[in-house]
Length: 196
Image 1: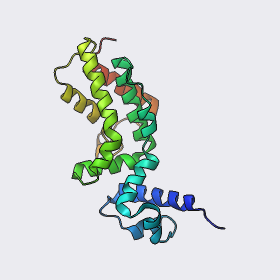
Image 2: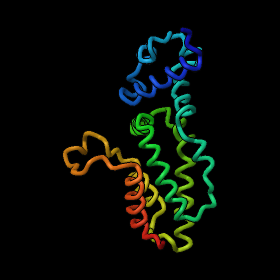
Image 3: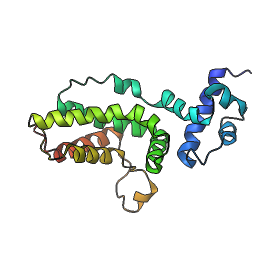
C-alpha cells in the first residue's frame, strides 16, 4: 500500500507534537520524529517543512485553533467576551494538551520560538484585555489593574491541573470539560466582581 504525501506529513506532525511535548524541542531529534512517524525518511522533514525549526511553526498552522479565535466577535459585551475566552482556552487545554505543553515549555524557557507562539496566541489575550478594559470602563468589572487581572485569568486558565505535581492533594476525580468551564467562569467572574 502506498501512503500519500499528506498522510506522511500528518504523521510527522503528530510525531513532532508528541515528542516536543514530552522531550522539548531541543531534546528531540529529526531522526526521533521520523521513527515515531512510523519510520518516515529523514529527508522528508526538509522536503515538507524546510527543517525542524519550520516544522515547529507548521505544528501551529496545523493544530492551533486560530481560525475559531480569529472569528471571535470583538464587539461582544465584556462579560460574554470574558466567558468566551474562558470556554475556548479550557476547550483547547482539554483537546490538545500536547500543544499546550509545548507552548508552556517554550515560554518558560524563553526560546527563540516564542514569536511564533505570540503570532497565534496574543490575539486571544489582546481580546481579553480589551473586554476587561471595556468592562471596567462600564462599571461591570471592579478591579484596579488590567495587567494583574489579565495575568490572573491567564494563570487560572493555563494551570496544568492534570500534572502529577497536584495528585498528592487532589481529592476529587477528573472534572468534565463542561463542569470545568462552569467553575472557572464562576471563579473568574467573582474575582472581577462582575455585575451580572
